[in-house]
Length: 224
Image (tube, one colour):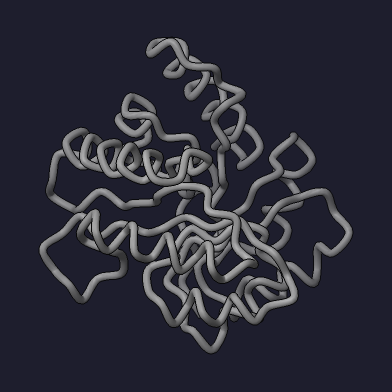
């Protein structure tokens, strides 16, 4: 069986090949290893082979890992839904937040002493109860609120392809929304999209940040 370090190297090579296929530069793509439920030892193993970006989706798990690895050269990405009352605590260790989806989270981060990079989460489903904005108007309105906050550098958009749907079509929709955001905010050029099962389609449609878990870390341990 391959180790996490070996899987990391394979995925990096595969991403480089996919980027070349679409005429893109591999170095323009940030590979975020999602380490949800995995121990610090897995992150240390990956750090030793060059991984530098790690994603977590639960504050109660992420904070202890950040403490354990304080001083190491890495960037934490928060990729899960955020409770407004935990936003300030998350900003203490996460330099990048991929799930800005409502006013209350943005307003909480506006009071933080820590500056973060932020992505607006898009909801690609018909379910308004899921995280993310559903319309271009809502995206642009939230973008304005992010700029007013003064503590968030707007990076672009983030999305998860719906289950049982064509990820290519989903990511084409994300690319369209990204272009609308860029027209209003030219520096918001990034797209966080693509996970273990669909990152190839995300690369095709312009993803700059891939959030890959099991293809690198292996099967997720049973949550505590």
